[in-house]
Each structure stands twice: as structure tokens, then as C-alpha cells.
Length: 304
Image (tube, rainbow, N blue to C red; front, top):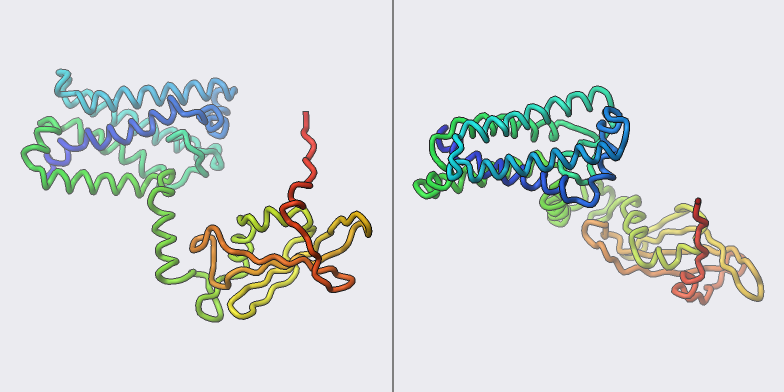
């Protein structure tokens, strides 16, 4: 089993290093991400931090190529394996320093927007370190190993890939978020209270604020949520607002949004929303063209 793991470690590690290295070296957001890492504090300049991050990406791509083509290129397994272990050790040390001196800083591991450094980040760096040690002990090429034991090789590669997905926070959008949405569809919202099928009011507000109806009505809305109630499968959310009329001038109004009582941003990302605008003085419905009102939104001034 151990020789199988050692012989198949190179392609798995190469895929990971190629992914993260290409993101750093060729990603358009590398310079922006570098500004959020501890490299800026160490180097004193965001531009140099971006260059260092790209250089690390180039090194990862070179090691990935060596892992894939090592035996064919005449390199002993020890060389790319040791290089990979060295990268893993350097990553771990860097993360430890960043965590100790700037815990709010970004990892910069894959040149994607990331939050603060956490246990999963250390786990991925540790996996690179241990995988490099395993690859250094390979006694056969990974393609010959896959040809001689195809079933076992496929299982090992699948397990390793699953492990890397779990410890890579930047890949959550690919698998974890769809899995959470499926769980909500099957078992309901974990924060749901009261009658079955109802979601929290906060979830309804979040869903509303991501809808086209909110974008259209927001120019006249002047408050946060003031009141809410449930009626025949609908959740009604009330906001205060001001409507500018050519004849009567500014009129105080209540803006009512009605959404499906059981809908959330996970189950209905594009909800149907009913909108009503009620004059606060006359309590009559204001015949308002929301699309026209949205077009009259004034632009915010730009700071030079």
C-alpha cells in the first residue's frame, strides 16, 4: 500500500501545484490579493509582494512539471519529491508567521480572494509537505503504477483528490455550497422556526435584497425593515420610503414586498416578488412605475 501511495503522489501533487501556481503567476487578481497578505509588511511594498507571489507561482509550476515528467526526464524521484516537501515546509512556516503577526491577513495560496488563515490552510500546506516526502520515496513511475494496478490507483487518486478538495477553502464554491443547498432543499433551513416550511425573516430580507424587485424599488426606499407579517403563504416586508411626484412633491410612502414564505436565497435565488407602494397620508396605492423610478436614481459623487 505504501509503495502505491508513493508512486501515485506525484500526479496528485502536480495537479494541486499547477492549479495554485497558475493562479498566482497568470491570475489578474494576484497584485490585489498580494496587498492583503503579510508579504506587504515584510517587503514594505505591494508591488514587490505581487512579484514575489508570482515568482512562487512559477516555482510551483516548475515543481509540478518535474513531478509529472521526473522519471521520463531522468530525474530520480528524490529530486521533485524533495522540492515539493521544501515548498510544503516553506508554506507551513510562512503561514505560521502570518498567523502570528497578522492573523487577519489573506493566505495568498491560490491567488483567489480568501479569508483569514485557518486550520484548513495549514492542512493543505501539511499535505504538500507529507506528499512530497511520500513522492521522494517512489520506486516506479506513476504511469507504470497506474497501468499495473488501475483499480487501486483510481481509488487512491480519488481519495487524495477528495482530501485536497476538503482542505482547500477556495474550492468550496465548486462542491460545498451546492452540497449545502441540496441539504436545505432536502431537510429545510437549519434556522427555520415556527410553522413548517417557514424561513427566518432575516433569510427573507437577504433574498429580497438580491432580487430585481429590490433593485427597482430601492431608489424610493428610505429605511431598513420596519415590520413584517405572514399571510396565506406570503411574507410581507414593510419599509418606509419617499416618492417624488411632479405635482405634490415628496410624499411619504410605505413600500411593501411580498415573497414566498418558504423561499430563501439557497432555494429560490431568483424569486417572484410582489411590490406595492402605499401613500402614508391617504393609504391609497401609488400607481408607480418602478422601472422608471429606477432610471431616475442619482449617481453618487466620485472622490478624486
